[in-house]
Length: 89
Image 1: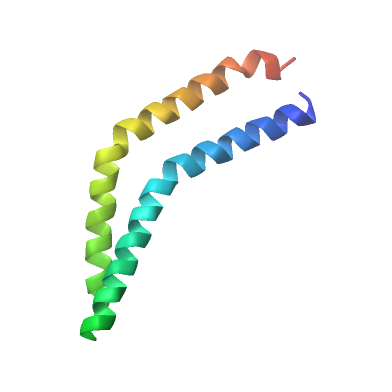
Image 2 (image 1 turned 120 degrees about the vertical axis):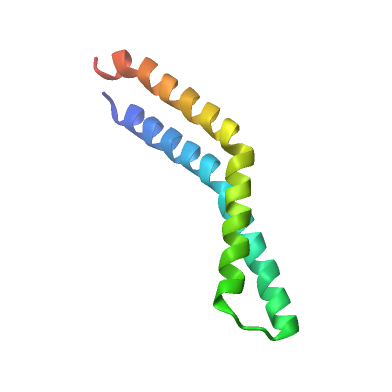
């Protein structure tokens, strides 16, 4: 196993991790900013007001993109398993 192989495996792992986490993180961030703007306009500073909408938005996003996430993860795992014989040489 060469240093280039290790770097390539680590790079692929990080790319897949970012690809899978980015939609959920972006939705959470956008909803958080929107709720903060509403709170600033109305001057309502309630902690649960930010938590509940973000939780609902993240759960809805997960339900919508779960098939894509699963297929991406399965493809990555299959690719990783296929690389095992070349890595162990």
